[in-house]
Image (cartoon, rainbow, N blue to C red; front, side, top):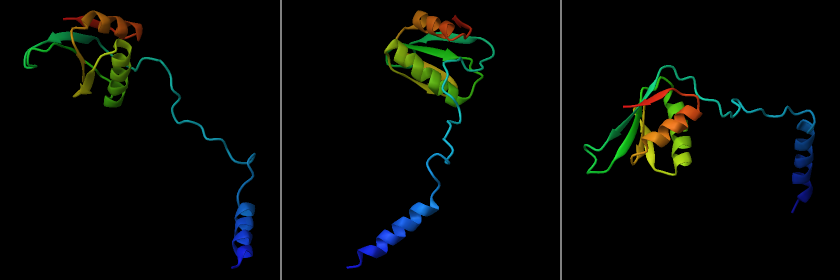
Length: 116
């Protein structure tokens, strides 16, 4: 068996690679911040029970931001409230009657909202 052959190839490969201090460090494309998304206008917080087999839900509508930003905001909101929910079709749905809690959360993020 010829062990020198693969050792020579490995040595050649190491020589062709840049030194560790010469390589540029990778930077994240978008830094993570706790800033509110660029939402314009006012959000409406609505309580619904119709069409949900008697279960209540708090709906947040009126978003002008991207679906990705809505998904991120919904994730933060659900984690903060410790409840389930979803983000679909430009709306955030939170399980249960959490209107006041949602209003406090959105205001703390610098977003304007009202309960309808």
